Amino acid sequence: MLLVALPRLNLEYLTVLKGFISLLRDPSQTESVFDIVEGMRNTDATKMAVKYVKSAPEVEQIVNERYIAPTPDIENLLKYPEGSLGHTYASYIKESNFTPDFYRKIKVEDDISYILLRMRQAHDIWHIVTGFGTDSIGELGLQAFSLAQTRLPLPVILLAGGLLKTLKEPENLDNLLDRVAAGYKMGSKAKPLLAQKWEEHWDKPLSEWRSELGVEPMPVYTP
Image (cartoon, rainbow, N blue to C red):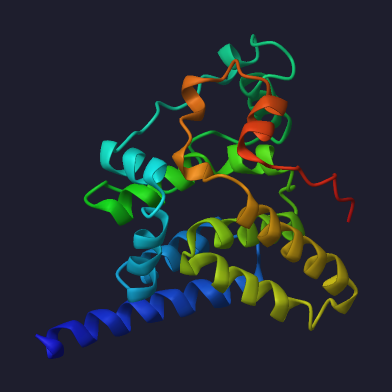
């Protein structure tokens, strides 16, 4: 069985390496992020992360439930009151020219696949709640937050890539380290974002969400 497993393991790590190199060349390559996740999906590090997030009863509950929300209707959410999560999210998606279902789909077969899908589904909501922007430094700040909350290997890989990139852009190092430190600290203090059913409470004010979750959002960063 070991001989059978080794080729698969090697192929998975090659997928991770390919995605990592692609991201170093072009951080906007979202597909490379999904390649890295797929390559790390069956590793012990990912399995330990799943065990870690499920140690929080509220996360274990939503994982066992397999809660998946429908794709948000942006035009309908724009009708919600200003300041609500729904209106803020819809405005953010529209102004950024994003789509709510940008992510690579994954079939839910186990706890790992469910957690990965749910995090992809709520990725932009996490941006909004934490205040981290979608520029490269903002993304890495959110990855530090995610690392504190989930222990998944993807944030480690992306943060390593971000730090390596500063060898070519040393002027960004201070801002990057500031955001990473703030993100990890914020994620350590906040309640689990993975446990939230955001889509059932679009009308709740964003400020109320942040207060309940113990999140003090980052100020807007201007590169």
